[in-house]
Length: 490
Ligand code: NAP
Image (cartoon, rainbow, N blue to C red; front, side, top):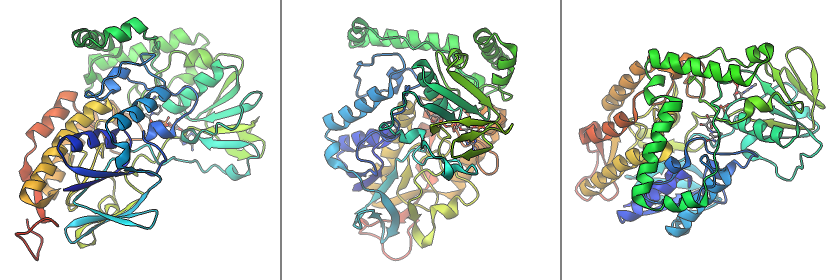
């Protein structure tokens, strides 16, 4: 069996490790010049991971070299490069190579690559994530801006910001981190806020050398992880407060109000910074000092969004022109693109665009009906907000390896049935209305207004794969199949 992996970000690298362990040959196609995915793209000032970094490590590649509890992006990026090099994965990556088309032909997948060549695989895994297609706003006049401008994931480090007036549009995790950092550095910053966000005020403690050394001792590391988990639950609540309405959610909501009230004494500014949506609906940015920073004289929050862009800056909804030399669009990503713009054409001309014409969906975040041996990692309904990525990957990849082993053993290609996919999506959709994710518009929401993320607990995420039946999959004739011919075998 040969597996084609699209993307050398966290998911692609995680999968590569498991394929190598199982003795399965693979090639990774990566459109960028290096590994790391979103951690390769994003280099903006102030970039930090916003989950405790130990829970962001691969469980099979502990490093313990993090300088802070929430490590800077450069350390995550280095961690992923080190991992890929040490595991011998780098030699299996074709860099600067975008996959333009994945087509099912004669029982296997042929990938057409941006260099004009093709390669054929028994299975393809789109490990593309959902944060790789920048969402660029189309304000009137955007093209007329005379200064420098870029998307947050494409930071232009050749532009020296010293003495420049910088506008940052967007209040997601990216915008909040950028404004916090530029504000602290003393830059002249205007933060354009269409929708204020709830911010989790979290100190980012340094991790001492002694602590790092102690973490190398497994028993101590286990003790430390349990302590941190307790602390996290004490400060952020258990995972269920976002999932079910009730007293715990009320306590958390009050906590956010109290933290904002304490940090921002001016009632007028506080009212403007107070979100209308409940906490947890949009993904909550963490910052130790954003509220302090927007009260500094060099930082000005501008409320209501952007009316238009002019050569000299941004005009706000009141018609005031804010003169700027640089505009940073921290306006998020086309999160429902997943593996696209790549075209995927399966048996009988079925395409991913057709499957997703009315909104994205999947079987357990990893499979698509009618697409044999075409898998995703962290696809629609994956728990992108409630479970750290490596934990989520451990569950998904564990199941995926089971599917690949079955495919090898049976010499068939596997795709989830429509019935099993409908049943899965139905269960998840039915649970979503009670969750905080469903209470406002956010980047999870699909065309029909449903959030496409996991509405249950971590444990339930693991359990669903243990409970999943291979009878949920129909079998298709595969290239390696010597026993079948003719029609699709089911
Ligand atoms: P995002 O959460 O989607 O936020 C986009 C922001 O841009 C929102 O405030 C949105 O306002 C605003 N916006 C979009 N279009 C606009 C327009 N036309 N006019 C005015 N404002 C507009 O994007 P993100 O901050 O890049 O974060 C995306 C995800 O990446 C995060 O949720 C997280 O999962 C991940 N991330 C993680 C980290 C980390 O771990 N440290 C850091 C950065 C990002 P509205 O709310 O009004 O739509």
